[in-house]
Image (spheres, rainbow, N blue to C red):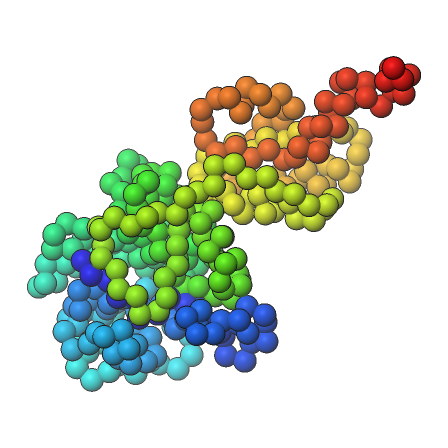
Length: 323
């Protein structure tokens, strides 16, 4: 299947109209993005957005061969004008499958938020999954066959990737493309870094991709040390780097500190923030965990681990260390 991305931005586009934020101010040239819309083999259009015909023309494509237009999410604002010659857009009920005369099969995937995901199988068997903004699949069953390509709201719903990875729908060779990109992350290097940590990538508007052809999947960093001062956001940054992966083992080295109400409140806030699929272990015995094969490991934090090690060695007693 040949896929042309007529847009890769959030429903309001990027930059957002009249938004004064720094991310929108920097979203110029190749970093500017129209609302996400996908053109598959010139025959299937997923999401009809303002200016779709002009976007197709800029990408060297035409909408004259489109036989089906499907919408993935509710559209706010005034109704989008349907270009002349295009069929009226519609949506496929969850769980139902639509077969086009071109040989494409489209199955509607139920979501946990308003909207519909679409799993498309091409005439030659390539498989693509497209998810709406702000949504993640609901009721996934395992094991599942991995898709060749997944297009999803990676920044807004990284847990959608975690769910797909948990059942095998996203595998080591799945090409994950970030779409519905908004002003949550500054465009450019920071966006690339954030997506690489999730094993995903972004492409500019108008890009044409071939589904099923091998692409260099971004290397997920194997070891990352997050530095910063006290309460500078180290934990949030570390959690963000792993929130697109299931079954993370969270190692808490701070202990319970019985009687310290402020510490208990901080621990509770950390626990509530973590995804439900993560496991937590409270220990300072890190060597066995680092040596063992297993899921991604998040150690929070090494400063408290070092404090515990110094306590065990009597490092605070000047008399012990006088020599």
